[in-house]
Image (cartoon, rainbow, N blue to C red; front, side, top):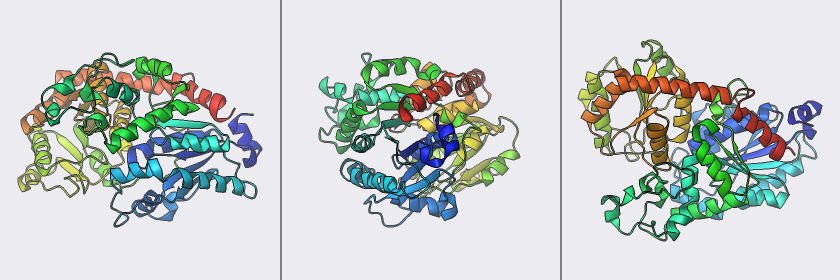
Length: 484
């Protein structure tokens, strides 16, 4: 019986997926998109937040109604043990890594046990599969404990995932850790990695930022090694990408990992196929930006967002600010209240005066809606994977300024392989930023990139419709793994 038929026959017969994202915004968004799709196909879904994130979402989304369960879709929490001064201060990355490695397996196991006990008295079926983030592979162990499939979900690119899977090889070959601090600036990061399966033109600088350390005992390097080893124990691997986009890497990954690979993205393109269940934003969105865009001409606005985590100095922010001002183009710029090395940005007064009427600053935006707005003609981004696939889904070309994680690999592929991006120099200066903005928004190269971006949008649309490869992969994932 397929999941939809099981749901129609009664909740007790429906498959029950427990979805556990890594507790950062991009990971939560992508996992929630997958969870909604499974729910639309007849699954009962339990989406698991950490206590900290649950409380923060309550603050940013208007109270408990934002996390009110829909029929067959519920939110749960577990004790995360994270100590923060208040509900708006994010836990450190080190405390998250420590908690994932040492603390969270037991409370998640207890949650699954509680869900199964409740299944006997409530209109909810017992847990039939567990889907955890690819860097929270303890979920596979919890699944083994309960005798259900343990699936890992990768919310970042296949090229970024492949580079992470090769961390042991990087260590064995003596490439990492770096030999000294001088390796950050002496050209060593340009070391070619032409042996890396399925990738093109990869260099050490494109590999996940975790490996760029001189410390052989780095907690982050150890964490990455352990989590990538966990990928070899999964029942299946699911990725938010598609075969047309990253086919070579996906094929190579199938040879590297024993588990079957299911590329089911871009998840944002399965529009109209899933219920909006809310419950994901860790920041309060400013919807007035959409009204502001309504008053702008088609394709005239540059959207700027460096993600939910990345920080920079006020000096660097000023270079970008003046670059946008000098470009002459309108812009919508997301500036978080912690973007300036954990503090609010301080920009020159002259910048505000010089861009009055053609620039809007917002604390956070509904990004997918912004990118889909007809007034937006380009995107200046840090190249986080959600941003890249949302830009592809909207047919919007990019200026790429990667900062961390696997963003340098995403930038490489967007610029060199897919032809939809131009890279901003690492030491971004106002003159260079202004020139790139002008080229993107009004130049010949920008016009070519926009045409290619629209072609990729069409491919992304086709692959997520009935008969498309990602649509087929989602159906196979359900039939072969999640509800077998």
